[in-house]
Image (cartoon, rainbow, N blue to C red; front, side):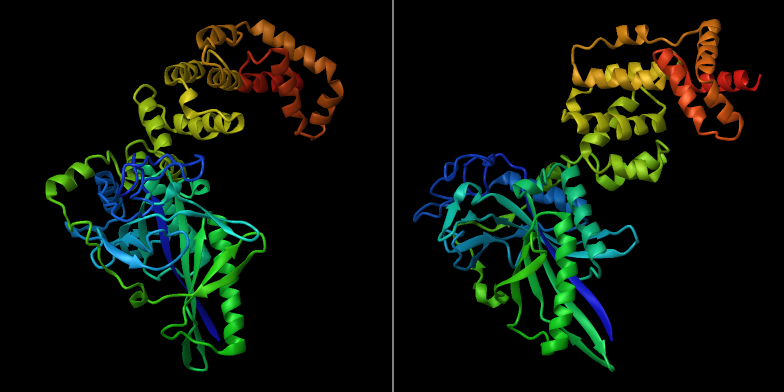
Length: 475
């Protein structure tokens, strides 16, 4: 028996706009009191007329370019009719027959191209809060602009699905079309999963299962893995195959680590799509599209290529710096004043971000000029790397920290006699360890070097200390 996994992803991205899709309610609804960020339009009250947010078109066009879509000058909004509690109007305004973006793609690290069928605009629903004996609804996010990015069913493993989702996340966030904060629901995944089973020269397809509303890459992988095993077991037991009308929707329970049946899945005809009579068809001219595209200063792939070819960074460093536009901009800005690019990349990735993550600080706490001053002092051998790291940390945590004064107070000792006397002292105080080193236990050398640096209060070059220490030990 040969079993092949088939996965398609629908990724819902909440676009970065100041207001909702069809009304003037603010988009900063998160953590607001329930049902306070609403109006007659997003509540779907009779007589309230929607008006399209132009910025949602701009953001959709940006994503279209970044994901290699054909950006359609003509598109249209439709009504998707279904009766769920979180949809007050009884229908969702979406794009069905004529979406704004079609026929896109991205390439995985393996070189495999994943085609993306479409990316269409639609409105978000209310939030459902399930209590013991009732469901509460918060309409604050109802009407928020979404872009639904629909892949072709060409993903064949949980690893491919995760990489695809991460690439979409990085690209959309890089071009500032969305913050993609999954904890806030700004990016969500619906997974379509089924199996192609070859058995005794016959081929079977299991029914497609849609797993709804996952909000982490880990859950994405776990849900696919579980559903693959569940569908194979179900096929072996019941021999049910894919037919019209037997698609189902299942929810993912992260605590239990399993999918749970929710309902039978509607076919496209069941939604009774028809053009929304309140919103005119969209006709975009080349001037509008070009102005939208001008808001992308650089695409993620172009930024990656630039870091590798122009700045000669290793691929791993370049990929890290293009995961987030903030990292890329930080490197680009500082590289205008500090041209040891590889060193700069390592300091940003390892030290700057390490300090920020550990302390909970913001990257804006880094003073770029002070950072360059520290790097130049290290390069000029005025201070040690360790001293530089300590000064950098204090400069991030305390905006009033005087970097110049602390560089001057941390200058490497230039008097050889002071360093020589310190090394002799450490050797005398640790004669037993010196003997162990001479007998072949080379690991103790790091301890001795550390003791010298501690005695010198960091004002000595570790490489010079090691060189001198070895000379004194061998005498």
